[in-house]
Image (cartoon, rainbow, N blue to C red):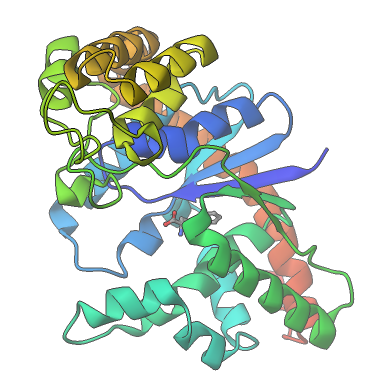
Length: 329
Ligand code: TRP
């Protein structure tokens, strides 16, 4: 059975974009593979952040993942910083990671541009990501398209390390592309993201979902009720593809193209489908929220489980890299 690893940043709120773009796929994968899912707090601190709320956001993200359907009996959920071997392997891999490739990463260039002083951690972000996956010799990495460049660099790091220290030691991880199209925010402009305030949260109540969906951007060419629209460029249709049946999607697309109904009718159906799909998650979320100690215990057990694998890898990697073993106490 191939091992799967993926990570998500502790932004706090899980939203429809995370769900359709990643988490829903993870919930499916836990029935087919050995899956490790990690809240990557060490990645989050490469950008400006608020230390006072990082812990809360990490716990909330873990709570959200469990509520969304990750089942600790089927997969392992843990927090990156609880397993210090991530940081250790990160350092060891910096010695083979190619600087030129790091500098060419588009995410790095984007984020660096927006900061006055660029921390080295931002440049090295993909090395830590490589460490996350290689630490467990995971072969499959479910991600969205925006991570493909990081995945390619991860494979390059694995090849270079293997070439220098042990042919075939690290498997070259493969991306498992999420099937859904990228979900934009309610503004229809940028990717749905908590920091842009253009999200629908996964655990919001029915009224809030409807209130947010009502004014959401659609095909801008549909100015009046009589204008036909193009579902292919409508973000609302993209979300229909995540929550409506194939028959409903066909009907929605037809009514849009022929101006057979208005955007509000289309959104009402979508809202009903979203609300129905999210109801069980909302309930689980309330239960986990009421019992944060249970979530923390799940994270503790998850870290303990993966640490067994992590320690073994680190011991082998240290030996292959020629580091002197410490004497026993
Ligand atoms: N960089 C990923 C993102 O922003 C998160 C991540 C960290 C990750 N480590 C990973 C994804 C390892 C896959 C595998 O979405």
